[in-house]
Structures are given as C-alpha cells and as structure tokens.
Image 1 (cartoon, chains in turn green, red):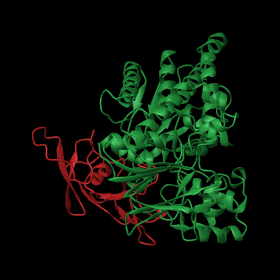
Image 2 (cartoon, rainbow over the protein chains, first blue to last red):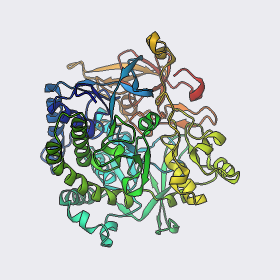
Image 3 (cartoon, one colour):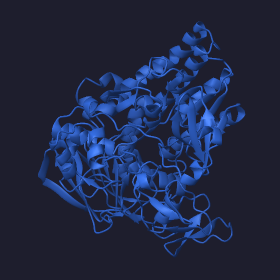
Length: 472
Length: 106
C-alpha cells in the first residue's frame, strides 16, 4: 500500500478521532467522516450540570478532553466531513456517501471502520408506546437541546450508564420514580471471576458508587433483580409495571408494582454497528464477552478484508478508553503496513496501547457478560408483543415461522418481513436474537445476523440521481 | 440545572435565539440549534406518527438516527428523522404517514 494513499475513517467518535490523530502524526493522509453534524460521536456530547458538583467536574473534564481532541484535529491536516452518511460500499473499493441530499462516490483504498454501537433494547408488552425510549435518547435530548423528554421517569435495564443517566435526569430537575436494574451492582463481585478486572479499575468503581449516592440523596428508589414487565397507556405511556425476578427470569408475582410515569428509559448495554463492515465483506465474530457480534480482526485491528481496519465499539463493546486505544493501534498498524514506520517503532509505540486494550477488554467483559439482557428476557414477550417495530411483526407471527422450521434471522426476514423496514433490522435483530435463543434454543451463532444491504440508510431517490454518470 | 419540559421554550427577544416552526399546524418555539425532536419534546409532543398497518402511535426510541421511529414530514419531504434534523425557522413539519421502506422515496 502506497504511503500517501488516503485512509477513509468512518465514524468520528473516540476511536475514529484517535486513529485520525495517529495517522496525522505519521503523515498519513486521512478523511474522517461522520453522519452527525458534530464531532465526537455519542461520547463527547454531554450537557452542563451544576458547576462545582463532582459530577459537574467530571463532565467538565470530559468536555475539556473533547475540546482538546477537536483542537488537535483542527490543527491537523485531517479532512473532516460531518453530516455525511456512508450508505454503501461498491467493489473494488468505493464508498457511497450522501450529504445534504447529494450523493458522492469516494475512492477508498483503505478504510477504517469505527462505526460505534447502539444501545441494546428488549421487547416487552407496551414497549412501542410513545414515552418508551432508550436512556441514551433521553440523555441526548437533554445534552443537545437542554430538554427533559418527560416529567416523571422510570429507568429500567442494567449497567452503569443506566445509573449515570438517572443521575443526569435528577440533576436536570426530572422526577425519577425508580431505577429498575435487572442485575444489581454487586453481581460481579459476588464471585471471584471478575474480581481482578474490577480491582484494576478503581476510577470506574468510584464513579458507580457516586451515581448510587447521588440517587440515594435524591430519594430515588433503586430496585435490583427487578425488571420492567409492561408499559401501559392509551396512546402514550402512563404506567410502568415492574416486578422482581429470579436468575431464570421467573417473575415473582407478589412483587409486582405499578408506577405512574410518562417516560420509561430502557438500557441494556450496547450492540456493535457492523452494517458497513458487513456490506464491504468483512467477517464478523460472536462473543458474549465482546457484547455479541463484532467485526473480526487481528491483534493489529486489521479486518478480514485486505485494506480494511476496525476500531472502537464495533470491534467489541468496551467504552471510550478502550475505543481510543484501539483507534490509536489501528492508526499505527496502517502506518506500519504502509512502511511509514519500522517494526521497531511499531512495537515500541503499540506496547502501552496493547496493555490498555488488555485491561479494557477484561473490564468490558464484566459489562458485556453481567450487565446485559440475557436471552431469558424474552420471557417478557407475549403473543401480541411486536418484535419488529418497523414492519409491526408480532411474536405470534415469529412463532409460526419458527414452527415452519425457520431458525435464522434471514429466514425470519423472508417469512415475516422482520428486519425489512427503515431501520433495516438494527433494532429487531437484538430482540429476535434473544427470542430465538430463549424460546427455540437457537444459538446466536446459528441465528446469525441480518444480511446488511445497500443503501445502509435510506437515501432519497432524488439524491441517487445526483450520482455522476460514470458511477451509475 | 432545570431543563425545560412540556412548556415550550420561553420567548427570548433580547437574544433572538428562538424562532418558530409549524407542527401539524401548531406553532412550536425552538432554540437555535435544536433538533425537531428536541423542540417537539420541549412542547410536550411525543407522538410523532402512526404506524402503517395497525395505526398505532409512535414516538422516539433511539434518539440517534438509527431506529427511524421518529419519522416526520418536513416541508413536504416525507420520512425525515426528527432526532437528527435541525429545526429551522418557518419549517412546516407534519406527522406524515410512513410507507414501506422498500417501496418509497424517502
């Protein structure tokens, strides 16, 4: 690979930025593309909380970090393209982009995929009611618009982010009726299995404890080993039914409670956004410790397809520090593969990154294995519960397909239209994976993923007409 | 810090940082830089469309442009994501019906 060929980085979150800055350091030209109008992905977007509080200091630090990265990028020769969606890949190595309804085809001899992750959701009766949203959605309207998406909240799911966002809602003046955690904070330290990884991350532990204290101070009831079982309301959310559960997700009926709320925020961790890697032909792999499906890669972040590299959450769920380390590693590998740096420099520069990555993955394993929705969460689903929201496919229709012998997501798509809607299965694939595994005993590796198809995101027909003739 | 909810944005003539757009014929006040979704939520609107088959109400789910639940019609263009589309002065936004993803101009 010629040293001066441009590297196209898709995704301007912590991983993509770290890769871009590393490439700039070694004089490798790079283009950094993101769908959002802002740089930093979902991580470097936070809203202001009361100055002086410790949470405020933490967010100030984040904002400061974000600003530093942004300044470094602005001073670098990296070309940044925001508001630009990558919607396809065409052989041999062309990326299809759309920005402002204008389509462009970009020669991309090497591509770094840093497309991040989306929040994991779960299906339960009433989860399609307006007022039920991901915790991240609530956080985003708070941070971006300074708007609380409701008045009285229930947060349900699991993981540290659930607590973090509950705290942010309280600090913004929201009334939080309950935080309902299907796991409970002490779960990983009950056994020795994860002890070492936990002890190695004191900063994270302090953070979690701080969220708990802040919520306790605000008088927010915290239920662990509980789950949301139903969202109710006529046209909009009015009530959330919660209940205690055992390890097999048997609901303890005597613990059922009905909470009045207009907003239910759900969060069950994250799932990697692998679609671009898929259409390009990069192999995926499945591991629960990585958060499910992720883009397979070697120890230098090279994907299975020559010229393709991967970094961040799409290489395994694990948070921003890990994402930045994998981004920097991918940048160094690209420089090394192009002969820009020697083997000696490569090994010296990557050694500390590899250590960070090792520790980060060990810790991420806890999040991905413990603080997640196990397949048994499919117990909450009733026959009329919609599993594919876009195409309005109920679980009873999925059951019929399964009775007819369907065991894969792509089989379900052909039979039921699951995954054929606007979101292209990004939401229902998670729900269906759990459903097939729990109800039918189909392993995730067997159920597979929906085939990604071009356009990865809907592109206006008018925009397609703007493709230059030689590309059409 | 108190965040706005349900009451819309206060008028702020001194800074001229707010403007209005139309939502199903109703005037909505928005801050400069707000998304359509943010402005609608600030005014207490969370039902953004009804579904094609069952006619069920839907509102935002993911908030980051992935789930396509918050589709609205903006100045006659159907299927725009309210969560990633900036609100602009005078914009006409309606809760248009959503057609099949594989058979429509989006």
